[in-house]
Structures are given as C-alpha cells and as structure tokens.
Amino acid sequence: MFKTYAVRTLIQFSLTSIGIMLIGSLPYLLFNMESQLDVLKMVDRKELTNTLFIYDTIVLNFEEYLKHMMTTLNLLFTDNTIQYYERGRELPLFPEFFDAYLQSMVYLLASLTLALVLGVLLTILTMLLPKEKRALPKGVLFVLESLPDIFVILITQLTIIWIYKASGILLFNIASGYNDRAILLPIVVLALLPALYIFKYLLVSFEDEEQQLYVELARGKGLKRSKILVVHIFRNSILTLFNHFKGIFLFALANLVMLEVIFEVRGFMTFVINHGVLNPEIVTIALFMIFIPTFIFFTGMQWILERWLHVKGELI
Picture 1 (cartoon, rainbow, N blue to C red):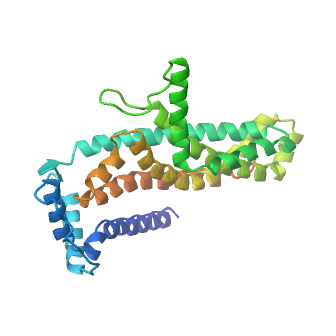
Picture 2 (picture 1 turned 120 degrees about the vertical axis):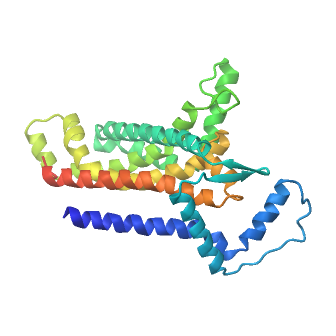
Picture 3 (picture 1 turned 30 degrees about the vertical axis):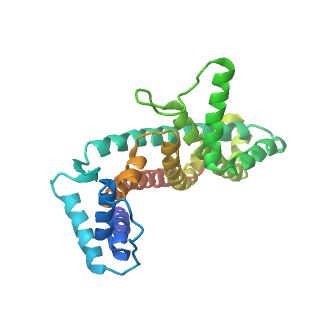
C-alpha cells in the first residue's frame, strides 16, 4: 500500500514539475521574446525612448520554447550562480531572492496559523450555542465572506489611520518604510478571510458530525458538550479541514501579492513582479520554490492523517 502511495505521489510531483516548466517558458512559445527583452532592456537603460514603431504578433516558436526550457533546467541543476538583469547590471539572484522568499513565507505561515486558530475557536464557540441561535453568526459570516479582499485590506488600513488621528495611538504600522516594517497588521489582514473560510467549512463539518450516532452515545455517557466538540467531533473533522485547507492556502498565497503591494512589503511576490518580465526564469524558479515545500507538506500530512484516522477509526 505504501509503495502504491509513493508511486502515485511521484507521478503527481513529476507531472506538476513538467507543468511548471511548460508554463514558465510559455512566453517563448507565443512571442519573439529575445527581441522583446532586448527592447525592454534598451528602454530600461534609456537607450530607447520611442517604442511606437515596435509591434509583435503571436507566433508558435517551438525551437525557442524548448531552448528556454533547457536553459532553465541548466540553471536549476548546475552550480553556476544564477543572475538577473536590473538597470543595466547582472546581479546574483541569491541570497537576495531567498531573503525575500523567507520574509513572504513568514507573513504567509503566520497568517495561516492565526487563521486556523481563529477559525477553530469561532467554530467551537458557535457550536456551543443552541441551534436556534446559530443563525446570527452564520449571517455575519455570509456578509463578511462576500466582501472583496482589497476592500478588507483598505478598510483595515483606514481604520488604523482613523484611530491614530482620533487618539494619537498607532496600533500597527500600516506600511513598510526604510527602517520600519509593517509586520503585525499584514499578518492580521491576511488571516481574516482564510479564518472565515475555515470557520465556514468547519461549521458545516461539525454540524454534520453532530447528527452522528456516536455523538448521541457520548451525550448518553454524560460527556460534556465542550469535550464532545473538542475531542471527538473536531478529530473527525480534521481530514475535511485539511482537504479544504489546500484551497485556503492557495487563496492566501494569491492575496499575498496584493498585500505586499498595498503594504509596500519588499517580499517574494513583489520581487517576481518587478523582475520577472526582464528575467522570465525567475517565474519558473519562484513556482518551484512555492510548489516543492508545499507539496512535501501536504503530501506528508495527508498520509499521516489518513493513516492515523484509519488506525484509530472515525468513531469514539
């Protein structure tokens, strides 16, 4: 059984890696990227100011497509120092890119941890209420999850500014400066919507589990409602939460781009945005830096959870 799981995991990893390579080099298939990059670099060096005469059409250039994929593979699997172009200079990509990556991952992981804690707490507190009184938190959840992501970020920033003007107390830095970095507020803001989604999915799972016979049996044994929720129902909802958590992670990762731009955080995403056009290889490298650790984590956790639930069962 383990061998089958390992083979399936290896196939998934290989196919996704091939997909990343194909996507990362896709511009070379559809456009004359070499000439376009030369023009962009000339504009960047201010050697060319008028670009109205330049035009390009969509082409199918399989030779350049394959050539760029081989070049990228060579960069990934050799010991040569990877460089990127910036303002007429070729600079080493690492450790600057890795430092930006670590900074962004700190924001992302801290916000997901906070979202997980908030989502679980909100679910348990809501489940402790009588069934007829759960309509209010469900209604609030419906309204909040319908708000656009950027609206939540901007409203939070404006609220901090309003509190500062009214009281002179700056609760959080609302943007990163030269010496100061906005840390707590971006983490809190990035955690808000994932927390609501965790709350939503867990609440549905908890209410489904509440109808199961083992809950009635536990109540008949005199177990406290809080213990039933935390020990039994929550354990049986972990796999459901984990399956939804993959989508929540991707949602938070997408919001990380907007968050770095609005809070002026010089992180991983803004680095890719600023330098990925003139250095297409950075996009492929960035995708692998996100994919590999998350694939290892989610694959390992899925195997552990499925094995644990299989051994211990789904009931009391």
